[in-house]
Amino acid sequence: MMSTLERDRRLAYSKRLQALFYTALQANDGRINAMQFAMLAEVSLSEAQHCLDTWAGPMNADFDIDESGVIVYCFTV
Image (cartoon, rainbow, N blue to C red; front, side, top):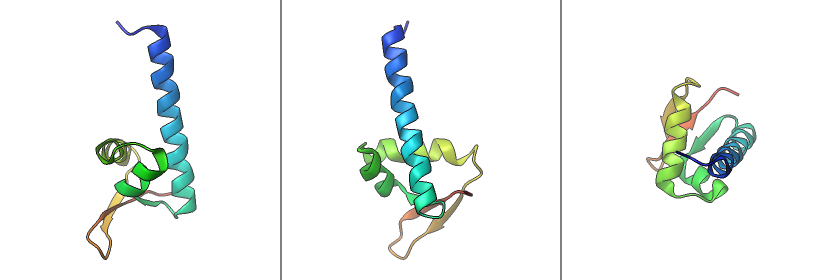
């Protein structure tokens, strides 16, 4: 069973990632890729990809491929 301290730590971490995510979306007209989010949030590329994939469904994100072949998540802001 998760301790209260661990639960609070995870909740704070999740809120931090979400705040960074929303700030980035506002600054980039709703567009972000996993590398951008990884660098902004100081997380691994795989964790950034997981976060974006998790948020993309409920937020009805579209996807685009940029000129270098990178997947760009397109959220409505």
